[in-house]
Amino acid sequence: MKDRSRALSAIAIPCVLIILSFLVFSGRAAAQAASAYQEIFDAAWQKVNDSFYDPAFTGVDWRAVRDRYRPQALRAANNTEFHDVMKRMLKELPVSHLEIRMPREAGHSGTGVRTALIEGNSVIVEVPSASDAQRQGIRVGDMIRNPDSDMGPLGSTATLRVKGCDGRTRVVKVRREIHSSSERPSIRWRKFSVGTGKRIGYIRTVRFDDDTAPAVDAAMAEMKDTTALIIDARDNTGGNMSFVRLSSYFSEGEHLVAALLNRSYLEAQGRTPQQIDPARLPKATRTYTDEAVFSAMSSNGGAVAIFSEDLGKNLYAGKVVVLINEETASAAEGFAWHMKLKTNATLIGRTTAGALLGAEYFTLPGGWRLAVPTHSGWGPDGKPIIDQPVKPHIEIRRTLKDVCSNADPEMATALELISASESTSK
Image (cartoon, rainbow, N blue to C red):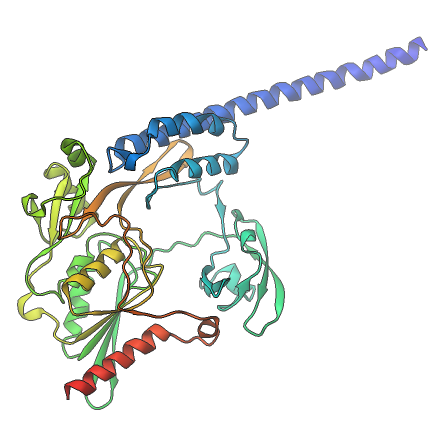
């Protein structure tokens, strides 16, 4: 019995040591994770505290928000839990352009497909070229029956249940990937002939970026012999003030497009006003690139009035139609606003995203990324246009049948409108 007891003791002691070592290691790992999350949390909260455009934080007690969410963030066991806490905290400020992203190598991603809610279903409306989703046979018009399964660790496999346009349900395994939405050039265009001697122009605005203004000039030079023009701003997620160069071709004279105000200006006012006098602000024209916009604001105490250009004889004289949808956002909504208020263009499609603010992006410890809305817009009437959506003149509801048949009801309506206007003008 003594020999057996000694043997059990000999086994038990190393096991206890292993367990103790594991507990010590786990405790250290948890402490290190909490310390890392504390650093990220504090940096993110402070950046919002210092840079958020509204000094009153839309009426939210931002310090109280920090005190409520900080303990939760420090208890996070992994990046996913921490990310969820941070997203909930940022949502306390009810504005667009405020988000945090995990480091790319550690973050979650999807399969790259773009979906839309159509007739109550999550329907795939775009499959990126060269993606694994395309390789695995995912098609436009497929309805995802388990949309929550799309997101997961980068490089892992998503198991999607999809119902095709043929009514059949299938299970498809797709690798989760990151697909950049950046495309160049940001403006594409073409012309086509209809009837006898009639030419229609088409401009696709992918985004409004630093390369937009010169591309717009090149496109509009080619559109001089067209009798009508369709500008497609659908799925345009925004960019910068370069949209003013395009809209200036359709709005007569020089006039105020928007006043941009940042934190320093609003703090000097002591509040975020519901009414301003744009005529009292410094005037800026040809302020298109990110660098030009930020330079104009910083040189003028955080406020600048962006004006359109008087293009004189280059003003476009034909019929203009603008296509918009629920993915038209940010600066693209600014374009839609200007076209609706100051031109004779007809807007066709669906109400825009309602995400109209100006953001800057900051790098946090550990490679996390934070977007903060640092400036906001006031319209020509002196009233704020923060996150206000734009409604079309003619609303078009998209159906599942449209997607499956590759129909484009917005484009069809635009062409019908142009045809009717040309018949009337004869």
